[in-house]
Each structure stands twice: as C-alpha cells, then as structure tokens.
Length: 403
Image (cartoon, rainbow, N blue to C red; front, side):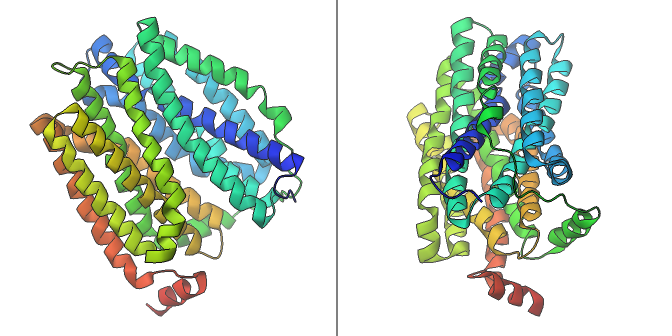
C-alpha cells in the first residue's frame, strides 16, 4: 500500500485531485451562463436552470452505476474513461442546434462525470495506508471545491471576454482535455483491487436506505444542497437584471464566496470534537437560515455577506453529514457514501424547480422563505438524530439495534 509522501502516493494524490478539479469545472461551468442562456433561448429562470440541473441529475444517476461497474472492472479504467467522455461531451456543447439538445447533452455529460467521484475514494481506501488516506481525502475534497469555483469563475470570465456563452464550454473543455492527458501517466494502476462478486450491492443498498441512522442524514444533505446551490441561480438572475445589471464575469466572481466553505471544512473536525456531530450540524443549519435573511435587502453588499455566511454554514453542515455517514456504518461504507452523494446531487437537480414558485411570487424574498422552510425540515431531522449521536461506531449501532 502507498504511504504518505512517497513518490507514488504523491502521483496518485495529484492525479485524483486534478481529476476532481476537472470533474467540477465541467459540472459547474454552466451556472454563471444561465442568464445568457435565458436571453439567447428566450427562457425563464427555471428553464435556463435545466442546463445545470440536468448535469447534476445525470451525475446523481451515474454514481451507483459507475461504483458497481468499477467494483467489477477496476478503478483506474472507469475513472479515466468516463472523465474523457464527459470532457468530449462538454466540447460538443458549443454546437448544439437548440436548447433541448443542450439539456440532453448536459444530462449525459453529468452521467459520465459521476465515474470519478463514484470511484476515487474506493481507490484511495484500497491503495493507501490509513495515515495516507486521511491526508489524501483532505486534498481531494479541497480539489472538489476548487474545481467548482474555477468552473464558475472562468466560465463567466470567458463568456464576457468572448461575448457569447459557447466560448466557455469550448475553452474549459479544451483545457480539461489537455490536463486529462496527464492522468494516465500520473495515476498508478490498482495493486490491491479485488473484483466484487455479484449480488452484494443490492442487499447492502436496501439495508442502508432502511437504516434510521442514515436516511435522515441523506435527506439533510440533499435538502440543504437543494436550496444552497440553487439560491445562487436566482441571485445571478437578480443581479444580472437592472438596476444592478452585473456582467457575466462579475456573476462568475460571486462564486468566490464558496471559499468560506473551504474554511468551514477545515475547522469542522475541531468543532465536532468540541460540540458533537449533531450539535454542530444543527448550529450550521441555523446559521444558514439566518444568513439567507440577507437576501431580503436586495443590496449587493448585503447579498455578498449573505452568500459568504451561507457558504460557511452549508459546507460545515455537509462535512458533518458526510462524517455521520462514515461513522455510523461498519460495512459497505463506500456504498453508504455513494448513496449520500446520490441524494446530494438529486437535491441539487430539484432545487431550481422547488424555488421557482417562490422566485416568481416574490423574487429574492420569496427564495429566502423557500430556503427557511427547508432549513426547518432539516433542522427537525437533525434534532431527531440526536438520540443516535454516533460518538463511535459501536455505540451508534447499539443504539440503532436497541430501537
């Protein structure tokens, strides 16, 4: 197994981090372009939002499929092959004849983008020592965040520089294709991979979905991301219209507020150690609800502060929920984590549809109301989970078995 800071460990960690950046660049490049798509195709905010929602829905649909296929065929082949297909699909988006074709291609692209996130953690768990695994996962998660920020920021900048949204897909997919060329040589082949037998996945999947330690957390993660991600879509439409009328590049720069989420991920471990998982998760949900109140002002500086607070709170909640999943199961952990991501990205796909009636009725104040209603639900689910607080796996399972 690869130990921390050895040459092969560095190569593998760099390859997985770079691959993760490429996944999330291509997933989120469309978000700052939504006002431009609405203008060019004469769409509502909800209609334009499908350029993002189709990709996240495709990703959610692909996670379990690619995870199971990688269990049979091997990790490296699935990760690199699916990422290459996804990048090529992204390149083709600039030449779609109509919006329906764009949405269909984005859904297919999302499905192939799922290959790497469905498989990367399993690869690390098999190939790295426990000490190396902790460090590598931290780097990998940071790469997720950086890729999402880069896709949005550069997507907006390129669109403004070129004067049309097609350039963003071409430039970012082209750069991604060049960087993908480094991955086959960087990523070591699997040494410890053992193909899974048929039939294991279905029974484990059903057990996880029924587990009262898990399904509330799956809902918390999915519902939180549903409103957090899609508030940016409606904020972008609000800020791109008069009287503020921000340019596409400035809309893309809004996503730099995600950087407070990187800080939150870094301090989450210390907060959980001091206050416990449920208390920290509940506090994060409350902070996110309070932060969303800044949208009521309609003023750019206050909206920016609101997004900074919401980003910190959301990623703190996300870190807590992910940790809960890992600490609450003793078997099929990779499948449990993949299921969490399925709910997570399914929520992202449905958020635009959920928030649209609130946006239509009252603009950003309506979006705020929609967010707070969801926070009330996720807060209640978290409060319910306090009885199962998994200070360690054995006590969590004992509590579950006693119910």
